[in-house]
Amino acid sequence: MRPLSLDYRIVLALGLVAVLPSLACTQAPNSDDGFTSFADDDEGNDETTGDGDGDGSCGDGIVDPGEECDLGPENSDSGACTGSCTLAVCGDGVVYEQFEECDDGNASNTDDCVQDCKLATCGDGFTRVGVEACDDGNDDQTDGCTTACEPSTCGDGVVQGSEQCDDGNLDDTDACPSTCLLAFCGDGFVQAGVEECDDGNQASDDTCLAVFCVPATCGDGHIQTGVEECDDGNLEDDDLCPTSCTEAYCGDGFAQAGVEECDDGNDDDDDFCKLDCSSNGWFDNFETGDLTLLPWMTSGNANWTVSTVDAHDGIYAAASGTITHDQQSTLQVTLDVPQAGVVRFWHHVSSEEDYDYLIFYIDNVFQDEWSGALGWQQAQFPITAGNHTLRWVYDKDFSVNEYSDKAWIDEVYVGPS
Image (cartoon, rainbow, N blue to C red; front, side, top):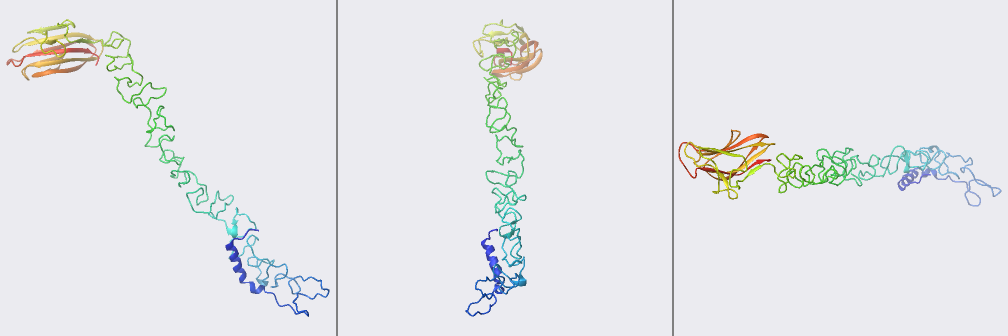
C-alpha cells in the first residue's frame, strides 16, 4: 500500500473527526456479572461475531469486529468509510472525494497518479513514464531538467551546466555555435562576418592562421609548412625572402639589394642581366678621362669634353663646350637596348635661368630641361627595348651670359631599373 505523507494523514484525520460520533458503539444489555457483552454465552466459550446486534452486517452503523469503520448508509467508496467498512486510504484504488485527486491502487510514482494520490504533473519530482524525460521537482531552468520536464540540451536557449552560451539554435556560424561555448578562433567553426577560415587549431603554419582566422598568404610572417620556404612578413622583392616566399637566389627574377645588381629570372647571358646577376647594361662615369668608353658622339658649335671641374663623383665629368648666343653644344650615344629598362644620370647646370637650358632627348623626343644655378641632381627615364639615341644639348638663347654658361653630366647608366 502507498505510504501516506504527513499532510495526507492530517487530511484523513480531519475527515474521520466528522464521522466519529456515528462510529460509537450502541449500549449492550447488562449481565448478571456486571460486564457488557455482545451475546449470551451459556457454555462460556462461544465467540462473539458480527456487528454486535446479532446479524454482523457491514453498513448497519455499528463497527463490528473485523470492521475498521461503519457509517451505515453513509458508507461510500468515495467517502471516509468505504462500502466494505474499511477506512479510505491512498492506494486503496478508490478516490476519496475532496481529499484525493486520484487513486490507482498502486504505489508507483511513474504513472498518472503519484504519492498522496495527486495527479502527476511536470515539476512534482516524479518522472512519468512515456510522458516526461525527467522531473527534478523544481522550476530551475539552469539545471539538468527544464520546466518542461525535458533534459537540458545545447540549443534550448537556456545556459546551464558547462555551457558558456545558448542562443536557442544550432547555427555554427554565429557567436554561440552548437557546442554552446563562446565562438573563438580555433574552435573549428567559421564565424560569419568575423572569420574567413577556422581549422580548429591554434597553429599558424597551415592554411588558416591562428588568432585572426584568416587564410595564410605569402607575406603574413608565418611560414606555411610544405608551401613556403620563408616568410618575412612583407612584400619586398629585394630582400632575402621575396614575394614568392622562396629564399632569394640569383635567377629568381628579384634583384636582392646589396647582393645582386640585377636579376631577370632567365638563363640568358646576353641581356641586361648576366647569369651571375651582375648588370649587363651600360655605365660611364667618365673616369677614363675621355669619351671612349661608350660610342659617344659630340657636335654643335663646340664639342663636349671630359672635365675635372666640378665632377659629381670621382675626378671626371662630361662638360658642354664653351658657346655664346644662339649656339648649341651636343653629346649623344646610340645603344641597342635588349630589354626595357631605364636611362639614369646626374646633371648640373650653371646658366641664365629660364633662357639657357640643358635639354635631354630620347630619339629626338623631348624628355626634360634644366636651367639656372642648379647643383647636381639625378634624373631617370624609362626606355623600351630596341635601338635608341640618347642626346644631351646645352642651348643658349640670343642674349646674356650668366654664371658659367655650361652644363655637366656624370654617371650615365642605361640598364635594368
